[in-house]
Amino acid sequence: MRMDGACFNHFPQASSRGKGGWCKLEGVTKLFLPQTQLEEWALADKADLREGRLVVMAEGGVAFPLTPAVHFVQLVSGEDTQGLVARVKTEEQLARLGAEQMADSVLVGDNAYEVVPGYVAEVAAGAPRPEGADKKPDSEEDLLAAFILNKMG
Image (cartoon, rainbow, N blue to C red; front, side):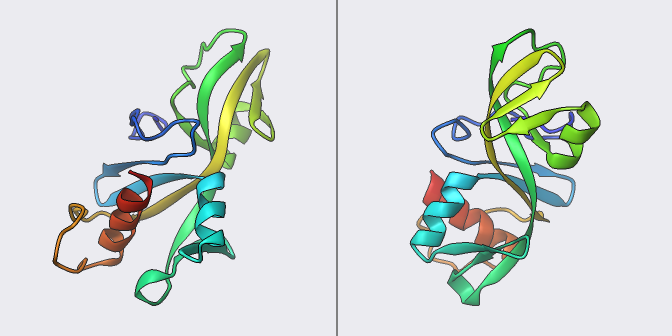
């Protein structure tokens, strides 16, 4: 995935099968979380979406702000002249493009795309702990990154 040239390079775990992706910028970690994944976590009481925030039930309900977004999976018709396939765009970015979203489709001019609706979570950067590490995460971003990597990997 790619988000406005800054990050969101394509990650194998970010696909239409409901997996998410993450990347790091200077001081920031951004994660794309598909809506279907958030629904699964909510049903399992692992995490929840409350008032525009992702609340991770582990560690007493740490919360992270979310921004509605879509992951462009494939071009359905037209030409991908703007290079949107494999990128993530927020609702604000879609509005600037003049795009119209309808469920799992986005129209940009005469071009139609299949998308995965979801959210972008943004937290201060920190190195995620490897799976199975004995040490407890030191920060909220470590906790979220470890949760995402363990549950979505």
